[in-house]
Image (cartoon, rainbow, N blue to C red; front, top):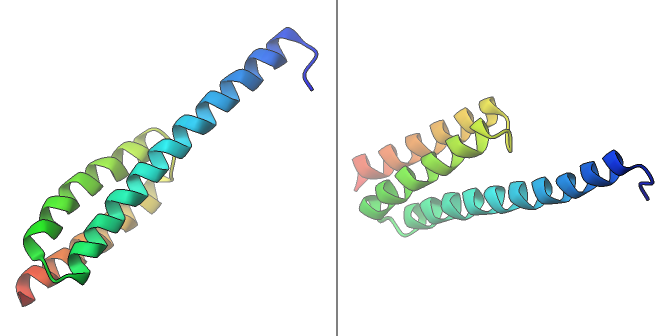
Length: 90
């Protein structure tokens, strides 16, 4: 347990930041799942719509430091390729 005033403040900040980051990451993962679900249902139109929202959330998470930039880039790339393949097939 923190005894120093600045350590107590830093602990409060840590708790707030962790909660915010957890919420952002959860929101991002949910958006990715919606894209994959649309791909699984072979619904290219809704997959493209869901992809736009997912890319926005992934990029935001990367810019805020929730995930690493290269991880974000890789995720966006893989989702985009999957949606383009689904659109070309269907």
